[in-house]
Length: 202
Ligand code: MN
Image (cartoon, rainbow, N blue to C red; front, side, top):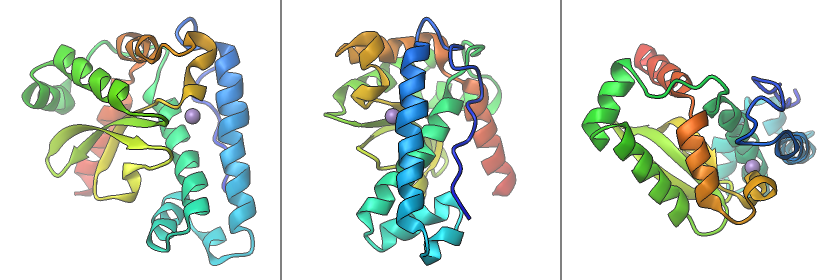
């Protein structure tokens, strides 16, 4: 079995002007593809080669196989990132997710402010997440390749805050990139689907 690079859920230029086609060509076509290719070379001929990606992440973490963990988590995180953005993003969450956002953060604007603070406070490379932790929503950031998918928490949304995600479009201005995500791209429907799938399985 080989880990495949999934297709983008929209055209490469669909997130313009907020994220350029050029950024997507490097970020998806080179970086994401690179993590997938390196992972496949690392697991080729090992027992991990027959596992689904999330199981590879969990096994690599248990066994402290850091090289495999890094590439496997980056492969998973990027697929989750593309889905976390949409060219037709709804302005706010509704249904159960909307209720949870209101009760946990006090509203969508307060959520955005807290997410922004977490993304800007992440020193160096990493990811900012909205997760379900038990029965509560939580915003958190992780370093480098680390991913809450390997833990008890359920990821609902993510934003990549590695410089390669925004440098071509925003240079070092991470805040402008984070704001573009929060104001124009955040895919609440995807977060709601993740929550719903979890509720059904629970
Ligand atoms: Mn990235």
